[in-house]
Image (cartoon, rainbow over all chains, first blue to last red; front, top):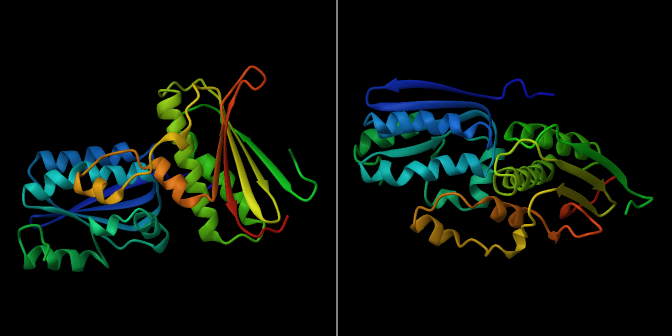
Length: 125
Length: 149
């Protein structure tokens, strides 16, 4: 019933920026996979992270919780987790709880990279 | 109580584990979408039901896979009514204080957003704890929306 594409993560590196592409659905069942992935990046000192949501169909609070778990430490170390290419359905879940106040949600990866390059610390204004 | 002008669907999870959540969402979406309800509302309601069931699995069942979760979906002319039945320790989500999201972000808090999402999405939430006559707890979630029954 459409559950075959459960969840997948693909990682790419562009210089010192790490891009994580998500597909499928991010719920309490699949969120630990993403948590492990971001944990590994942060642990190895990689703190400029873009998460691309273009192929993500669904997110629940378990998925939102993964970003909350890391954002403080990543920003404290001078990096950021930028969220890009969200479909309206997924953005509406972030928006429902006011997450755009805390997270930098951008149109696409290029916009995120540009922000990181303009301001190497955090990539924020 | 089933009404004459309503349509009724029922789903029983094979086990009480997170891998069932996708099936639960599909159950809500596939049955509700056929009744003239917009996709945006259906996906929000499926999210609320996902959050309620994930809370049950984690907090009431403590990740023990051997429990029951039964869900009924009633499509009424003016609303969607979902009953989630469990056999865990009674826990009334309505007693959880509403999350202040500014404080939440200021303190970089983690977790605890499921009930907040349910309260944001649903119009009415009723909790009926188990008793000697009814061995299961019932969480009733109601969304006001015009439906073709």
